[in-house]
Length: 296
Image (cartoon, rainbow, N blue to C red; front, side):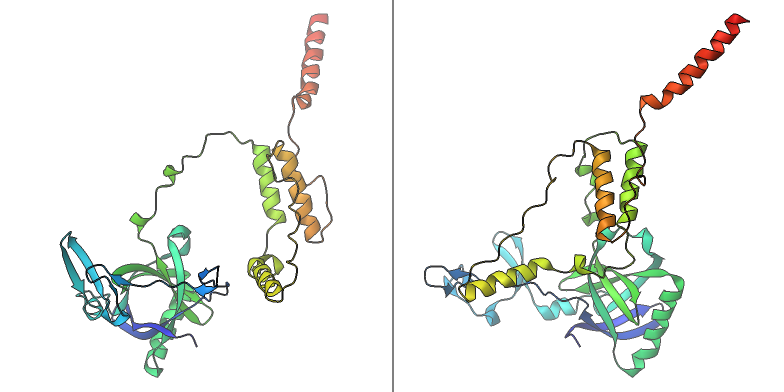
C-alpha cells in the first residue's frame, strides 16, 4: 500500500466519507545526482542564511511571505492546516458533470482515495457506485500544501480516483499559439481519418507503450559500469523531412500501419485526390447535346 499523503474526508452533501489519500502513480525513470567530474565528489545544494551568512539546518527553515521588501510574514505548517476554510480538512464536492465537458488540459496528477476503516466503507462504496451508474464525474474543492485546489473524482475499477485540476484561469487561451492560416481539402481530411482508423487501438497494451528510453539509459549505465562499448544508436527513420505530397505521405503511413499490425495492405483504401481530368467526360456530353440542337 502506498504511503498516505493526506487524511481527511469527502463531503458529499450531508454524507461524509473519511479517507486517506495515496499516490496513484509511480515514477520508474532513472534519477541522476550532480557530481564534480574531476574527482566524482557529490555536489550538494546547501541552504545559506543571507543575514548570518551560514548554512542552516532544515529544522531552522520555515515558510514566509514577503509582504514588503523589508517585511516578511512567517507562516507555519500548523497555521496552514488550520486555515478557516471548509476545504482545509475535506474534499468538498461542488457538482457532478459529464467527463467530456472537462478539457483534459485542466486534469493533472491522480491519487487513490482510500476509505478510512470499516465505518467509511459503506458511504465510500455508495459514492463509487453512484458515480459509476451516473457516468459522471464529481468536481470538488480541497486545500493541500498551502493552496486551495480544484479536483475531479472518478471511478477506476473499485477505487475512487482524485485528479488535481488547474483552475480555469490557469489555462492559457489557445489563441496565443496563433497557428498560420492554411487550407485543407476534404480528400486530405479523409486520408487523415483513414490513417487514424488504421492506427486505432482498444487498449494501451503492447510494446509501443513501454518506456524504451529508461531501458536504453539502463543499458548505457551498465555498459559504462562494466567498461564495455556503448550500445549503438539505431539509424534514424527515413522520410522525416518536409512533406512535399501530403496525400502520398498519408497513403504510405496507412500502408505501414497496416503492415505493422499484420493486416493486408489494400492500396485502394485511401481516397483518391480529385483532378480536373475527371470532369472531362461531362464537357464532351455537353458538346454532343449542342451539336444535336444545331442539326435539328
